[in-house]
Length: 76
Image 1 (tube, rainbow, N blue to C red):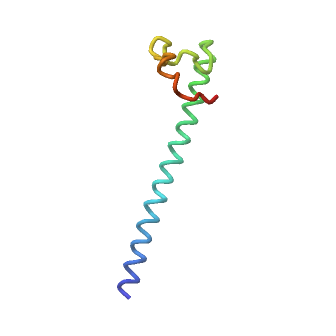
Image 2: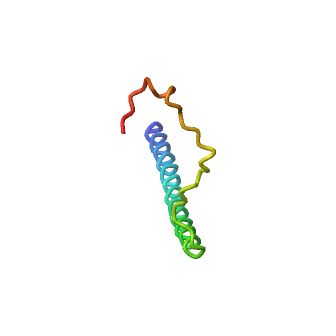
Image 3: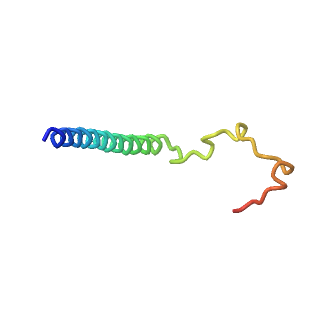
């Protein structure tokens, strides 16, 4: 009988933890969607593009030279 009660207790604790974690995930998803709508609204009001083509400045991107990629197969 004692093992049965311990098993139920562990099952309840695990279930509670899973439900609590799922609740956090759902709240964070709602927060992210809300933030995205606020950012879209801000960009539209300021006349900015929704996606900035220069999110990373081109000077900060290092592309490999022809010698570095000459022996590799490039699949596009």
